[in-house]
Length: 152
Image 1: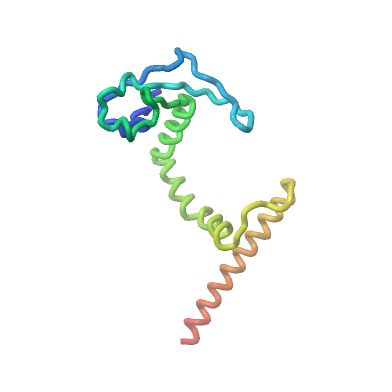
Image 2: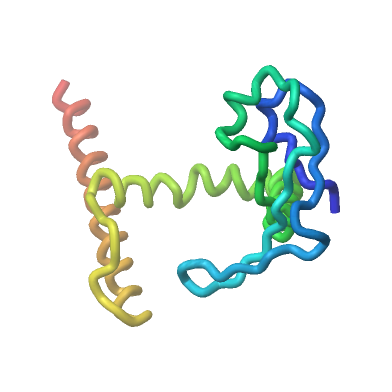
């Protein structure tokens, strides 16, 4: 695994600074609001003294501190590698043209935000009705466009 990209966190600083672990080698493990455990490693700058951008970089009296999740960075690197591959690019192009526009239409233009029914069978039927409505509206728009060109 590559070294964590903490330079993004501290990119505002003008000096080259090195981060060292704040609390030993072991990362902290905290539970999120949904009780999912996340491990993160708090890091701090070696020294912020003499940095001309310290006021804009941090509000703390001491050195700048960041919390880095090495597990999250690993997942981000894996996702980035997949997306940058030829297969990932092909999938991204397909995703742009195929389903994303339909979901955008349903959410933004039709106001659909959540399923009203519960259970896989009922949700599947609701998706079917939404798809049918989308296709009928699309067909009606195409018919109207053809009628307008025919009358001219």
